Length: 294
Image 1: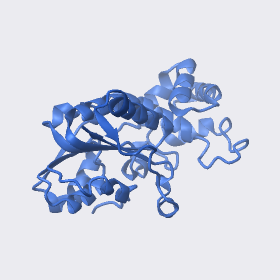
Image 2: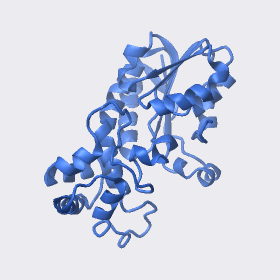
Image 3: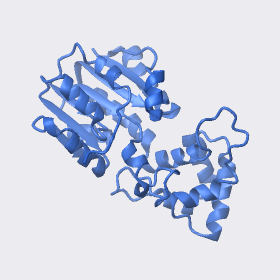
Image 4: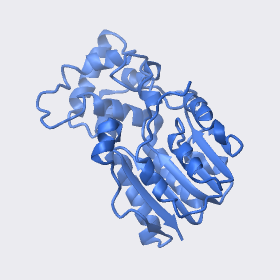
């Protein structure tokens, strides 16, 4: 059974290809296949669709979601930072959705969320070695503080790191519940007027980004994607926090404005409207940017 998945800004995503004919398309983060299904349905002329994802569970769901288009679809396990190893160039369109999907967040065994107690894992690719548990149980207080500040922009990074060191002296931090418990006296709701997210959000975000080298993947992946894109091809990136969006903005500007090799199709990022945010709270922080290659 296909798990419920609500693609974000899907109509806006489709609008950038409405007047375009697509032969070959690459979704470097296919996830559950929500954007892919919408695009394939809207473009019957498409010859080949490549869907790539690190998570084998996501690919299994995508396979079911995209079953009506199976003759056109190739699904591959891997990181989009290695697009050039998976896809023959050139391609007419590329899309990267940088968000953590419900497949990861809603499964306790993935260890991404403080909302569900599970192993402190956080690996997108289960075959990689480094886990969040190894980070919090073996890294120094200084290194943990740096991670929380650099990748979570957590203003209380030093206090959070100290709390983890103190907790692990008593017992190993094995689960998301253990980590939340270790942080609860340090990262509280008090003094967070106007903040909508849980006090542990930024620490969990920082660990996930570090474990999966997400920002490095974005840097490398966008460069590889732009090299694969055919003349007049279009590329979109959906990001969910300022660290990602900053990289996307800089990379797109470098390519289109400074190097004059393309055109920015979004001068400012598109965001979800009030109705979509009401229906899908995960859309609140989404930003969509698009460019075309000359």
